[in-house]
Length: 431
Image 1 (cartoon, helix red, strand yellow):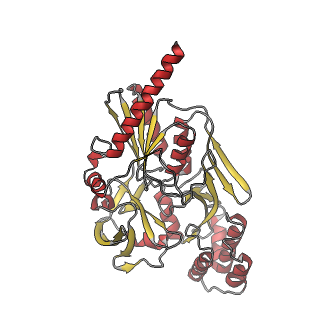
Image 2 (spheres, rainbow, N blue to C red):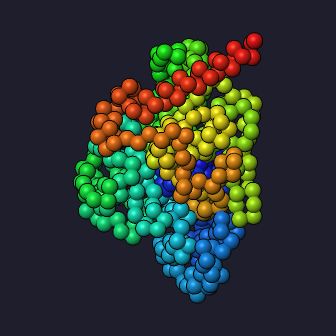
Image 3 (cartoon, helix red, strand yellow):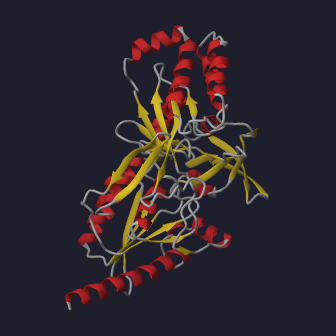
């Protein structure tokens, strides 16, 4: 997810962590709300017009958008808001874009909660496969009920409390998975396209502190290990505090762990990139009219010491913005496996009756103009984990970032080489 001060920018990994922009929320709310309750058709028309003006694809994914307006606005009638909501959902389905979606007032409120750093639920981020429409787990959030029960990145959710998810959109799934603290939900998942497993999970209140860090000894000197689990509202501040503390301990280099980080706020990813990159482009967004926005470094990086970044298939959206920028600038060596491949940007707007609309308005590009949507970012050093190794790391989280973690071990080796090269350059310059 990506969110800016102007609004929410949810990158398209749906629900809890993607890239979005909220505009216009709360303006003249009471007057608009009364009007829309009297004229639900006006709400449908407003949604159509927002999509018409802003959708990333000027062909509307080869849909006759004017004909859609005739069907859902000119020729339709709606007796109340609920009928209008269903009409909007049917209308948006014409685009076959799972990330352009309508949220009723409760769903819109849930989306806002998702970015605040505190959740109530089981602790997973979901995506929807654009072709199969299957509900996919991007990753479980560490130290949450889903993580502890063994939900994994890439799992397909087949049923929620016995109810099939076939044809179900992400918002509906999230509403079913969420519930009162202490209550249970059963998720039936498909793993590796062959095994169905039932997980009975107790819901909890989840406070998300996204940064954990430690000082680690190595033959090359002190290493700062920073694990970033998502890009929420406090991620940049916690990252800054971690770097400043590790710098005070005079580390020789850093490993930043973005594995299973499904993304979050765009501003957070940009702020964090600026802590590592002193100059140059960080990310650009492109809409159907061309370049929409260009974010640059600001000359205020906190360190220029060698850096290695760990990524995997659960690294999505804002994680890909950060890792792509670091890779393109030659600022870091990426170790692990291919990232998720989420490169779309949604604009989320609050509507007058408290509902909301997410519209895919752009795609984002790395500094070298790579379009990573569906492709992801390839690591510089590919290190796969076996299923047994993944299970071991999940079951004993103390092994993550230890010498029992094969990807971390490779990251240490790459950092050792980078530190040696940096020292050699300094000596050469001194001579």
